[in-house]
Amino acid sequence: MYKKIFTFGTNLISSVLFTEEQGYGFVDQEHLNGKTKSEQALFSGGWNLRSSAQKEWKQSLTAVSEGVRIQSNRFVMIFKVLVPEEGSYRVTVKITAGAEGIPSMMLFSGRRNLIERDIQLAPNQSYEKSFLTYVAPYIPAMTSTPCTEKAIYISAAGKYACFSEICIEKTESPVLFIAGDSTLTDQNALFPYYPYGSCAGWAQVISQYFNTLAVCNQAHSGMTTNCFREDGHWDIIRKHLKKNDIVLLEFGHNDQKRRNLSAFGGYLNNLRWYIKEIRKQNAYPVLLSPISRIPFQDNGRYRSLLTAYAEACKMAAEECQVPFIDLHTLTFHFWCKIGAEAARDYFIKGDITHTNDYGANQIAAFVVSEILRQSIEPLNSLLDFSEKKAFLPDQDTKEVPDEPNEQGLLSVAVPYVDIQGISQYPEIVKALHNGLLDPCVMYLHPTEDMPRAQFLMVLFKALRIAGKRPYLGEFCDLSKYEWDSSYVQACIEENLIDPATVSNGRFRPDDALTREEFSSFVIRGIQKNRSERDIPLKVCYEKAIQAGILSANGSSEETICRADCYAGLVRTMELLGNLNTALPSDAEIHPVG
Image (cartoon, rainbow, N blue to C red; front, side, top):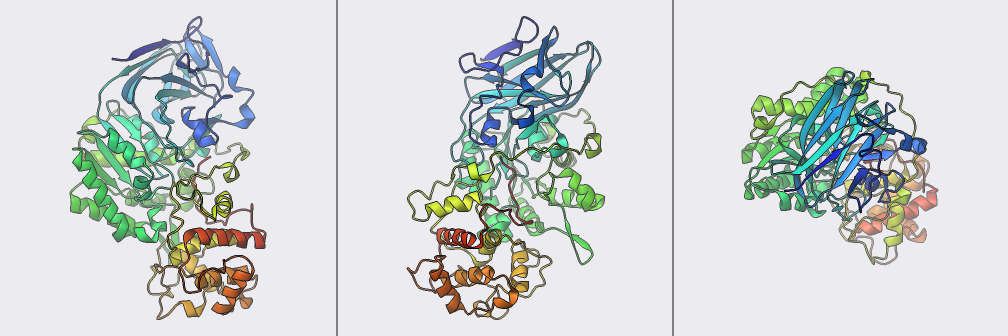
């Protein structure tokens, strides 16, 4: 059975940098694999070095008699060890403080998975922490190529944080697998480290509550209940899942943006499917409703757009008799209680969906409290009952240094595996680089029809305009609290809807968009003044063809495929001069580098 012990300090392992030949060492921030920050973070324990600290990181570690320690308050040290196989490993970290003591040390494993948050040691005091970690493939954001590196990362933050000894040994253990989206995925963070400005998914910090359970977080940004299966993330879990393992599932934020994944339709059906597949392997499924975004007010009350998905999730749990954690209600009530402004301290700046490290810890605490309250087994029996100190936004500075965006979407290689050789490929590249497309999914489905309401989300990104709430209910086939209703309301107010395309008080949100309807939305949208937008369908169609927005091949009544929609919108942006400009304020962007 594999076992390695690494002892640190003067004349032992000092600040030696990792090499493949050696198989261990501290991560070299100057020579990381990967093109994007997300890929590079996979080879750096979930961390990215700030560009402003490039010259300082080599001097941030010092070998002393007690071990190797960090000299600066917000720097991070990352130790990497190659291991022979995938699976569970027990890691034991020994720490001995020097004459200065350790004011507060944070310990992480894997992709910045929190193990212990506030280790405080008096001068010369020693401490030992043993925990489990899991080695498995992972598909990084903005690529379709899995990372199959077999390595364990142990990282620490905090002034005088120290590694004295690290022991790694192969073991067998129960595993908690995580399936979901960006709200619970492992998010990379910059160092020097500021918790307030660091994005984190709540499952990224759940390991601190389990010492005898390994956590394998396969959640991924941009995932729907369909994409998680189609893009290969479920296959990784399926291949590793064994009897008595546990799978937590939380989806909804991206499902609600897909017309075919309505709460009580495709979404509910997919949850039933996952439960069935987990049980086939004699493992335990647990369903969680999607966390609430920062609520908005409507008619004097706080509202959430995810209520229907929470109810559908509960229905799936009751039907299939599996444990259910109503994370939506818990988070919604918490944000309402403290108020929308205070709630922003738990999210990354300018975002109402993705939490920072404070928000992730708060939500993980909710999950654990429900495991205890409901006695959800086997998780309940595996919990570590040591008291966790509060982690609140006012415990550290909210002044986070700016980091120049050196990469952005312009540097992202096209991740879609189903567009090779299609004629619209050049335009799809431009659409991706200008924020019209989700870089986190693998399949674009270029030949499929585009639902009318779903098209509006992409149209508004191209026109660089925002949706408007509340939706006033003009059409009877669209709910006030659906994701797409804000775009429809803006269309009404901006005179973007030709009356000939709607009838009997129905917008027809799920009908496939026709070439003529596409032309109408786009040509009306190009006009600067609302009063100039009363342009007949036939005229819009002719103008779209003349402007090169739409091909002359095909009839006006034919449905338009997704690839032609994206290509036409790129041409529209070229005509408007919108390329490489800022996205509208309500565009929800996944926080990936």
